[in-house]
Image (cartoon, rainbow, N blue to C red; front, side, top):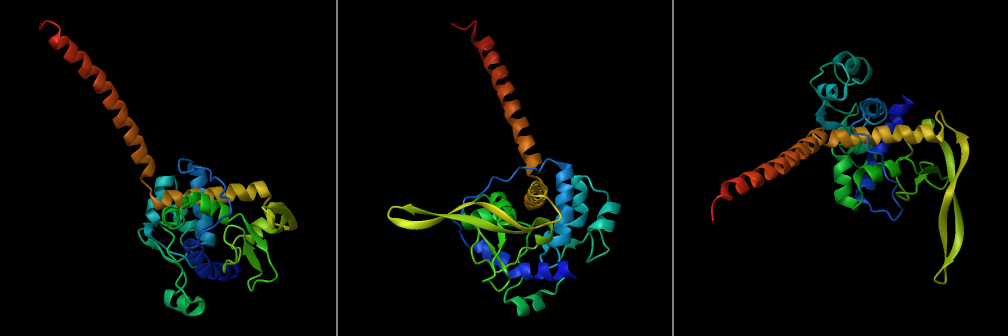
Length: 251
């Protein structure tokens, strides 16, 4: 129940975060779209912490077999809103009620790893990886949470039980005659179920899954492109030698 409520509160915040720019430096997200174990763990995190309110309406459950899961594993561990393996990944919440409660319908997350880059100019995976790792406790906010990548975010930390609670450390420095606060690091308030390294790894898996979900065929496309370029390179050499052999006796 707690996860469901937290997931619902994500709706407005993520929608706002996607539309806003950020001056906070983005961390580079590890590319795990070829790592089957990471994608499977990311799918588990997505189903448990995102699908409560957010849909992935362009992704069918049976496509998760492409990341090495069996249909039995998908049914037993990832399907909470339907019993049909061919259905799309729909949120558990009623969209009309969500709009009434939060003022905006929860955004669909199928393409968020790609669309975020178009909106804010940052790499979509880099933004998501940074955003989900820069939450901190802020007693002045209604939700009790804030975010360095998106200040004044309306969404509380959906994964705080895994990450724990922490506060950012700022240092006041003088720049061009003005005092500014510079982020220097984190101070732990209460530990979570994961260590900092484990949490970063989990978020990398989650973002990797969302990146794969946004374009499941991207790795096949890249591999095909490499093969085509190799073929053209070999064909160019062959054609060049054939051309030389054809014209060698012609004065």
